[in-house]
Length: 292
Image 1 (cartoon, helix red, strand yellow):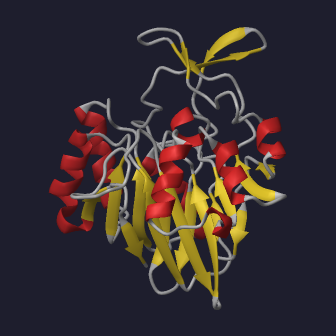
Image 2 (cartoon, rainbow, N blue to C red):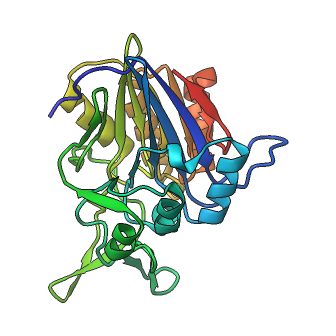
């Protein structure tokens, strides 16, 4: 499935992130939530990508940013982890709509846990189950395929793992038919927007699939379209220097006009991105607004 159509313009607002802007009154939290305002033919649709992990802080930031929850038209969950999904039902209650689209991978409600430093569940938390989401007005669109949200805006669907240096970068496990298996985070999806006269803008949550894998996957959906910008988390916070360098070199091949990376990207990776891309790179922070 290709990314059909184009957007006339796109505004991205960082509603929640680990850090905040200098002299900001916004609330930071471990997690990420990005509001996409996609304009096409005079109409604007608002899509929230992830909800971070503290709905009270998220909703307070929305008030400070003059974002009405009722104005949101859909939510995309990039993967199961609590710092991207917690409080979804409460946010849906504030949005106050019926049959409200919530787009995610069909494995998002599985058992997902780590044992480092001790056994701990890190997936979708109590209060945000399938039943809770539907009771709050959400309608789940669960698919492994790319999902067009509107012409020019779509999810990637499940991303093929093709590079030899990218990995989940966490010791995660699940249980399948009573057996403990390594969890490779196949539910990790991203969002791609095609903006007229600019190219493709890629929006990630954590990028557990690998940011280079994600970009290659998007190219397979849309051909050799220009990658204009990349925003989100790259989950390289505990990556080796070798993997960081290979990732940054992989990104150079796509020649993006700008990169804004934070959350789980890691300071060492941010430094390498800055050294490589100079003023084309910005560290992500709550309150950042990008107009395209």
